[in-house]
Amino acid sequence: MLRKLYFSFRYLGNPTWDTGVPPPEVVQFADHHDPGSALDVGCGTGATSVFLAERGWSVLGVDFVPLAIWKANRRARPLSGQPVFQVGQVPELRNVTGTFDLVVDVGCFHSLSPSERARYADRIRSLLRPGGDLLLYAFTRPSRPGAPVQEVRLLFSAGFTEQNLQIDPDGRAAWYTYQRR
Image (cartoon, rainbow, N blue to C red; front, side, top):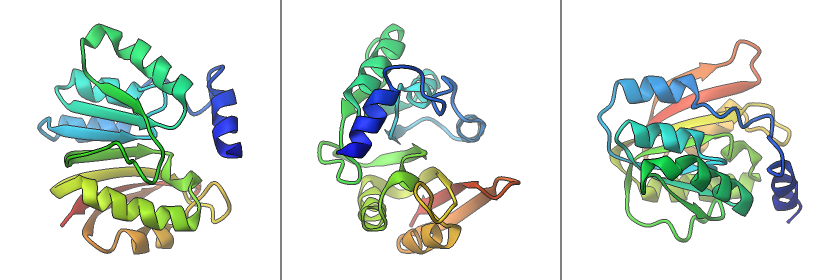
């Protein structure tokens, strides 16, 4: 409850993490992959979702903050129906159905508790089609928010193959690319 209040309050303004542009890692991925279906977990105000939709992806963006979803819908208004945004709770993602070619998580995973992270990994595994990709950005500090690299690797060792790991030069964050087996 406190976490939701904190994030809701932050979205009254412009949170520091919401740059309004997709991360370069997502842009690079889109440059080298054909469009398909994508799930943007913790989509915030939708910058990554809108970028992927503009590149031809069918995108579902999910965030637990209604104001963030409202802002995402406003950002996507010129795109006539794509992407689609909905309020949803991670790690359950109860209203999310089907399978996806791509799941993107830019900073949601590391804010979860260890038990939620295990449920998250299981849920993402069920939503990602075999051969599909997971792009995950997470802080690496063991304290909250943060998930140590070895914890992430362990959680995604079942059902996924690590394709790439880029740890920031300061060691505080990492980009993971996994492919669903």
